[in-house]
Amino acid sequence: MGIAAEDIERVRAATDLVAVVGEHVALRRSGSRWVGLCPFHTERTPSFSVNAELGFYYCFGCQRKGDAITFVRETRQLDFVGAMESLAARAGMELRWDNQRESGDRRRRSRLVETMARAVGWYHERLLASPDAAEARGYLRSRGFDGEVVRRFQLGWAPEGWDTLCRALSLPADVARDTGLGFVNARNRLQDSFRARVLFPIFDARGEPVAMGGRVLPGADGPKYKNSSASALYDKGEVLYGLNWAKGAVVEHGEVVVCEGYTDVIGFVSAGVAQTVATCGTALTERHVATLRRFAPRIVLAFDADGAGQAAAERIYGWERRHEVDVFVAALPRGVKDPADLARSDPEALRTAVSAAMPLLSFRLERLLASASLSSVEARARVAAAAGDLIAEHPNQIVREEYAGQVALRLDVRPEHLLHGQGRIRPSPGGSRPTPARRRRLETASLLALGLAVHQPEAVAHLLHEVLFLDPVELEAYRVLTRAQTLHEAVEAASPEAGELLLRLAVEEVADADAGAVVGRLLDEATSRVLAQMEADARASVGPLEDLQAIGWLKLLVEDLRDDTTRAAAAELLLPFLAERAVHEARS
Ligand SMILES: [Zn+2]
Image (cartoon, rainbow, N blue to C red):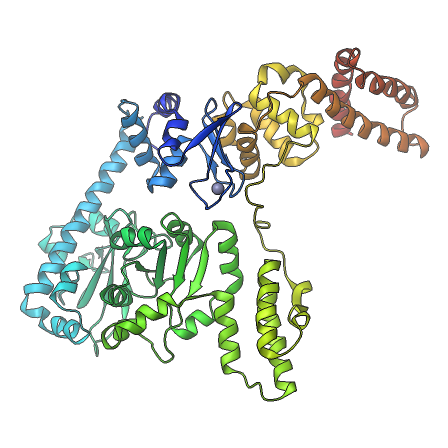
């Protein structure tokens, strides 16, 4: 990342996570932890836990987790470097960069952004004043984009010439290429990427210009829209047009309207719907959703009527579950292909479409019911079957039953008829929505032992071994933990599942657990598994003869494990036995 690794550790060590979190939500002490209402999801009973000593937080409701750096990144919409700078400033520290190249990368980025900013300004001036932009100005006026809109969105005009911009800005070839503003053509000459197009500059969420969207004038040749290709600055799967301007309104409304194009954004904003963004010539991605979720919990899709109806339900339900976001659909009046036109002719209709937006399932059912004939029993049965199919796609049973009830009433059929499709629901990746606010106790011996390994490593290190962990995620968590110097290192080395488990354990209460008893239970389980295997082998006469003796010996030791006074001695014998046997099994 460029920041010296030891600085990252120094900043972490100097940061009081409870104080950082405390600026967002009230925390109260509970044992060795601090708890409060989660800043990432809405809840009434606290399920957000902070372990001050280890510097980790975990939410039992939404499973958000991390350390001070992730917390600052997520709550303040900063990148890693930004979060580090903020925490370092808070701790009164100065960051050092770990080598020339990395800080060079940041200098390079600022140079590219600076070049983009100059290009945005140059194209904009060109649109405002240049004689060759007269046709473009006329076109924009005809679309209702007056001087105020042109200035507000910093629209520009790319002239006809082959290399007007590159020459005017004296762009070196590598800068032209890395900003996507120009390229070296087949005759080895530097050429402008955008020619004879109205330009919509695209900014990232922080307001830095990163790309261009270009539209041809009506009647001109070439594709209607041309966008910057991916560059060092621009990732279209992540950037949303207009988010830089809309941010404040999005947070204020708790909602973001997503439409399809640059002119749609301008139309919505002009109609008074300031919380509007657009994807840049791509479908909405999960990364877009994750970005938007940082600003608002409600996403309203404002595609044209057909586009919205065809939105992939399965993907959207998945986003809703994984990102705790509610996706709504704004029904634009039928036949409206261009919200920008509607913004001019009937801005009220645009505002109404947004305020009357419906959950996706509701939207699809309404469309079905509106277009269906309900005149005969047979027709109603067909509609009921189709509605049942739509309802069946929703992953939540309560939601399914609620909609089935509503639709059944309107079709005059029994709700059971609309719940027919339940058996066909495919399990979606990511599991079910977490039960809110309920703290799961560490119920198994292996989880308790792992918890102890996180909190009191010195007390259990010599008592534990990989063979005691059966569950693959728990085993991995134990492995990374024993190999790492710190919990941070372990979490970074772990798979997402094992990392999540470690962070959850970091905020669990294990202080009252008796290490000896926990390890005893774990050894008991592991030995019993081995015993069962040995006995089965003995019955089938495939095990070695000495196993018969060993079975008797093990049974006595298990007895000892269950007695407080003999447990430690039995454990000392059993652990090496199990470890050796595991090595032997692995070899044979
Ligand atoms: Zn939460």
